Image (cartoon, rainbow, N blue to C red; front, side):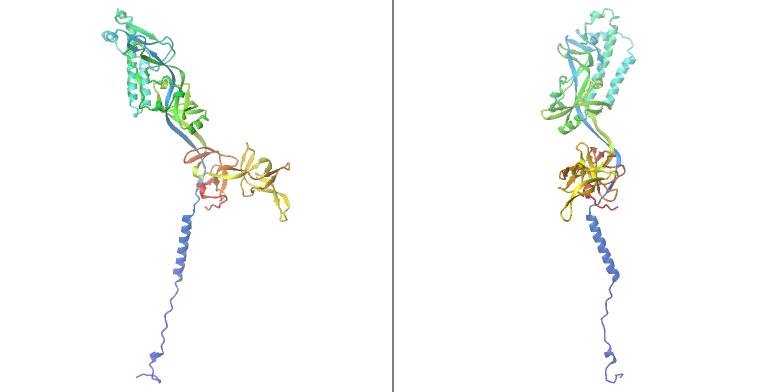
Amino acid sequence: MANDVNGMNENENVFRFKKRKQVNITLILFCLILLYVIIVGIIYLRKTHTVRYEVTQGALASNTIYRGIVLRDEILVDNTTPGYVNYLAREGQRIAVGDLVYTVDETGTLNEYIESQSLGENSLSDNELSEFRTDIINFVHGYDPSEFDEIYNFKYSLKNTVLKLANTKFLNNMASASGSANAVSLKYVYAGNTGIVSYWYDGYEDLLPEMVNKDVFDEKKYERTQLLSNSLRAADEHVYKINLGEDWSIVIPVSKALGEELLQEDYIKVKFLKNQYESWGKVDLINNDNDYYIQLSFTNSLVTFVDDRFLDVELELQDDAGLKIPVSAIAEKEFFLIDEEYVTENANNTYTVLMQVYGEDGSKTMSSVSLEVYYYNEDLGVYYVDDSVLSVGDVLFGDNETSFVVKNKGSLIGVYNINKGYADFKQITILYQNDEYAIVKSNTAYGLRYYDYIALDADSVTDDQFISK
């Protein structure tokens, strides 16, 4: 046996050590980087980001559609002789005093006589065809499927025109019809006023602006009576209506705030949806028992709408052009108000004030301090200055050795310009705005320019905040 001298097994001299674990540097670095990315990502997601918006030229048009009631100077004319009325003046025709308007057939034999007589070929002249064309074109352009009763009004209008033409032909042939004058007893009725003729009434002929209320706009209760030619009419019944002059108006219900705003316009451009005709209406505000209405008055085109009591119109309230910015970019900021005599404007468009300062030993001295002006109100004679340099209680001196104590403040509406990489407040003058955008005046002394960059959300930035790209 192979034993050593001391009789010990040679394996008994071997000692086993535990294997030391190696540190994985790559894994540790990866975990650290991952942790850093997660932390940065969380900070980024929780941070309010500044989104840039480029200022461009634009315009807003605030056009609103309203339905109004038409007021005219109207006179209802009553019949004096009972019988069958036949109109000879076309609806919408302007007549003078003494013009023939209609005839009254007292015996009721006019139709029988017309049918019994041979009046020759009933071809229409160019003028007669023009009447039909005018009626048809006006109806087609103003037709609204939601107002089906307009079809009946159009029907009655055409019927009256046809009967008028037939009656005219009859009258032209009366002289040549032997003995016909005795066969048909006719009374000729002439106009007593100058104006535009219409053959319907609705009870609103005497309606004045101060009498308008909510009930007159309830069209479910509205009743209109069409006066038809060749119909039997008793004495004292309405026989036709005459519209005097060219003055007429539309009354529209509005809120008090809108009414006061529109009143400042004096005149408003109006588009009539019936025929897309545009005109300028003079604005008046009416307050009837705290219900507000605007009255738009016109001096022409009465004949175009002589057959209408209600009209849909589009008020072209604003059409302002300027710099277009989102409403979300608009902010309000307070500034010190400094009288102009205490602010010096230098040649290089910088501003300074002469301010009282204290030395380390408490002594008072005067020092020229540069500051930034955000707006100058010419009417008040004051500059708007922020609090980066001035504080409440600071004393300023003028050229005539008078003093001014900084204390009064005023607010400005503006946006944050970020052209230079930091948030710089710029005053704006809003010309008009809606829910999404505002149009502001361009090229103002302290305002914006085309292609400036502003913060899209004013709440996401603070004064002089650094804006990273």
